[in-house]
Structures are given as structure tokens and as C-alpha cells.
Image (cartoon, rainbow, N blue to C red):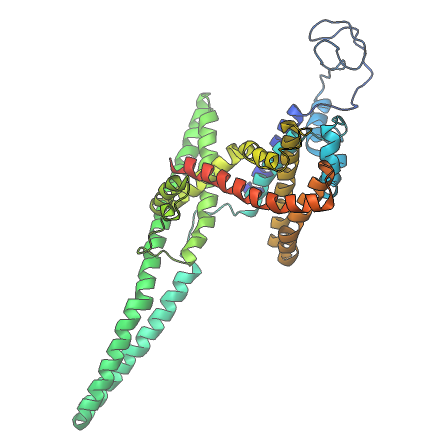
Length: 419
């Protein structure tokens, strides 16, 4: 339940923040005030022409609640005009916003901020909270069961042959050969499945120890937070630390799936072997992950949340490369294009994640695989008024550029998490 509450809180916070940066459109009310209550200027309409404040300023709890609902559900009513165009006519939306139709639609930045909050709210909803009791993954139990059954079968066979040897000493040589073959089978079992079981058990022990540490941190922070509230002391820092610890618990529970495949200590995954710029930071991150993978996952998730805005400046130069010889298009145009495009991709990811987690994996997978390039083509074709062929080849390049931008963003957040 706490995951759903946290998700709802993220949505409300995102809507409120987006509302804060989003200009209003057509929300003027009849004002009874003659002068602006903020700057004292004489009012000439629904808003002050000097400072921009509304002429009508409410002071009722009902209106305060209305503001919250309005932020979440309406975005000035523009959200219902913007979303359909974002999904089906992204090029028209981009072009019209760039050319001045700003009041009709939610601004790219406001919609982007809301989508970021909604994405992580969905993450909190879909990823389990993770209770305090953590058991070994099913793969360990399966390997242990199979290993014990095979070992017992071989040991029983050896015991039976030993009994036959005592009962019939004349056939001792033949029986000794059979016993030797079974002992080889037993050694092969120890070197194979036995070693796999030991590695999985060791990895699981590390996981359980890390989880117990996180649970202890949560208990300690909850206790300190309760004491601070009773003493009337500031609790912001403690609340942030507690939320971070709970998020780490969710992430570590999800990361436990990695134990299903085990860990190969002899494998040295080294990004520097690829020899590309930035590989050193990733290699450092891999070493950090080997020591404490759950902590790195938590840092990556936290950094992705805090630095999601960096996807915009990372992506804009790539779009500029597609039109650098057409000087009528400004960097602002590309920024609007990129922001709306990234916002759509996040919203599509949310929809597909929900479909996949509710039993409609095929539909979600098909949407995620085929609709992004179609969306990019339509946005390029109509936003920049290109030919169909021009939009097609740019879509092909943009698909590669998008993966490159995503890789650079990943390097950024992984590198920050490794430090």
C-alpha cells in the first residue's frame, strides 16, 4: 500500500510543480478588487498588467482544495488538448507551439516535469515495497534440490556396489571399475552443480546481509524521526534519509532477481576493453556494483530522477545536426521538439509497463517496439515540414541519435552513482 501512496504523492507533487511553471490560459474571473493586492497598481482586467498576479485572490479552504485537484486533473484544461496531439499529431503540436500558439497547450517543460514524476510514481507502484523477510530465490532451492537428489542417487549406487563387492569378492575387479565411474560422476557433480549451489548461496548471503542492514537503517531512522517530531526538531533531513532507505529496500528486492542467474567470479567485465570515451567511469561503476550492487542501483535510480532534465540538452545537438543547414530553425525549435518527444517516450513507457504487468505483454511489447519510430517520423514530418523521404531518413538517423543520447545519459547517472 505504501508504494501506491508514494506513487500518488509523486503524481500530485509533479502536477503541482508543472502547474507552477505553466502559464495560465483563459482562467480569468470577474474581479471585485480595484487595485492589485500585490503591487497596488490599478486593475484593468483579470490580471494585473504590472506584475501579472490574478485580480481575484481566494482565501477559502474550498478554493485551496480546488487548486490541488485542478493541478492534478486539468493543467488549466490544456492537458486534454495537448495529450491527444502529443500521441497522434506530435508534429502539429510542436510546430504550433513554436509558432506562438502557447496558451492553448501545456508547455513542453511542464508536461516533461509531470511525466518525470509520473514515471517514477509508476515505478513505485509496480516495484514491490519489499518486506522485512527475504528468502532465498527459487533458483537456489531448485539447484539445491536437484544437487541433493543427484548426489543421493550416486551415493546409493556406490553403497549398493560396495555391498555387491562384499557379497561376491570374485567379481571385485568389475565392481571396482563401476565404483570408480560413479566416484567420477560424484566429483563431476561437485565441480558443476555443487559449485553453482555454493556460489548462489554465498551471493544470497551477501544479499541477505545487505537487506538486513537496510532494514536496520529504516528502523533506526523511523525511531529518530519519531523522537525528532516529539522534540519539535526539524525532520526534513530524516524524512529524506528514510524515504531513500525505503526506496533502496524496493530496489534491492527487485535486484534480487539477479541472483537467479548467479555470479561468475572468474568473469572480469571490463568496459575499458571496448575502448570508447567514458568507459573508465563505467568500469569503475562495474567494480562498485560488484562490491555493493544494491547501493549502485539505488544511486542510479536516484540520479536518473534528479538529472532527468539533462536528457534535453544532451539530445538537442543531435536534432540540430539533422537541420544545421536550414537556418530558419532555431535551437529553441529543436528544444521544443526534443522535450515533447522525450515526454511522449516516457508516457508510452508508462503505458507499456502497465500493460506488461497486467497480462497484456504482447500488446505492450508491440507498442514499445513499433510506435516510437512512427511517432518520430510523424513529428519530424509535420514539425519541420519536410518531405516524406526527408522525414524518413531523418527518423532513421534520429533513432540512432536517440540511443546515443540515452547511452550518454546512462553513462552520466552511472558515473555519478559510482563516485
